[in-house]
Image (tube, rainbow, N blue to C red; front, top):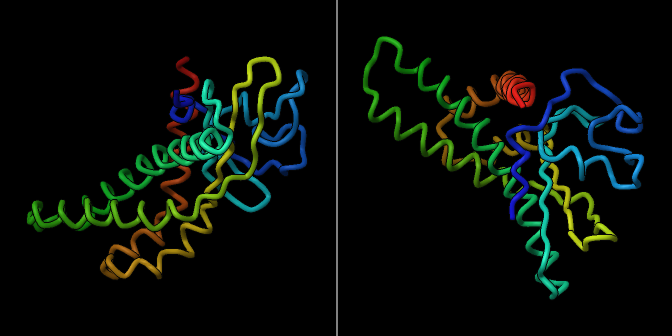
Length: 192
């Protein structure tokens, strides 16, 4: 069972220190659960800059090692879903900017899909599991995964499969695309 809140989580448009009780992810709820358990996946600002947060949950697996591995992978999967939206939007903008006036769309589309896969493969390796929580009443296990936007930027030079134009475009537009994703997540949350 995946936590589907990733696409419906609210974002945080201004910097709130992680130590602040108003931070959307850090801290404890009145019932004693970590805030991130109730808040779910999303894109938020923190002390270390902008980041993607993924919350995975699991119930019913008795083997502790298998349960830990599964809940961690589900948290990573939540980030992967958000990150795919993020990269797809950025690559769509890139495709628009490179095909303007030159309609070699099929070659450009292949470059865009290849770039999206390459970026996602390299960056997903940078996701770290930050925390775990087990609900004492239900036994449901939760994992919090984090992918810092700055780590995405640092990994760009390692992406040798990408041509220089794509790397430069991603570097120049990553923060704008993050902010666009943040706005989209807030809009979806407001509709609920």
